[in-house]
Length: 289
Image (cartoon, rainbow, N blue to C red; front, side):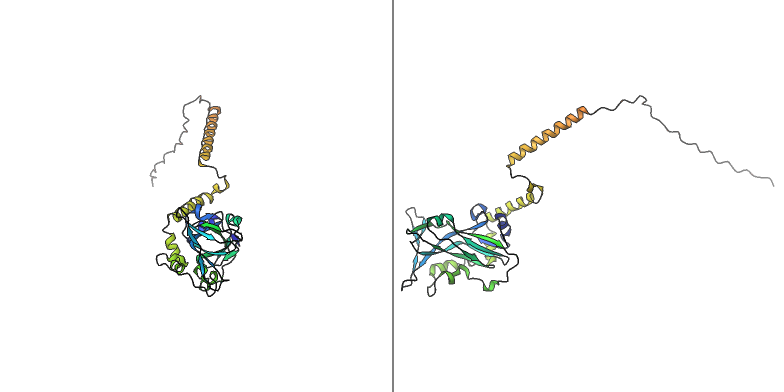
């Protein structure tokens, strides 16, 4: 089993990995991981209370920015903006963001099975004595993709439900109606995790096309001898090529100056080889009887 690099991920986009929204290599990929960002659907389920009511964690600041406030010593379930599908020869591991961990959010250690599709439910545990605020759209976790040594037999028919509602929401709690409407939005079917729906949305993304073009250019260069050369800037390469051309021209001039000229010919008259004369065939004479 091996871990996919950022270029491996781009190579698998539309083949074994389907993710939407995809905001390009710089924003959706961090190192060898996919960024998972917070949607506005975040809740705390108070299972120790008899009322069994959810607590919506969304609020707005004075600049009208949407924030998620995780209360002290509480666990927040946050659904991601991104919907992801991974094929049966891939799997994933979800990792924490250091910035959140340093504030008091506990480490993550969940997995993404082969053939999973849909938005993801990320559980963030606030272990500190203070409330922690997260801006909607910020990164809350990273998804590292692993290539399996052989294809998994885990059928898509038995995969986890999109959004992992059954696992993320405690038993006997109703699914928040706004969350269910968001997941089942007919204008955004890709949230439910079907790879064809995600691919259809992905192919309309300019960032997806840009990433594929970058990969194509990189592949042409790296599949040739250039993959063994240093990654210098184009200006550096232009200077090196110009210097090599100048050196080559100087060597050619030096060779031309030092090369001895051919000695003159003292007998310019061409030598003509005489042709061999063929004797004429004698005529037949009549012999008297």
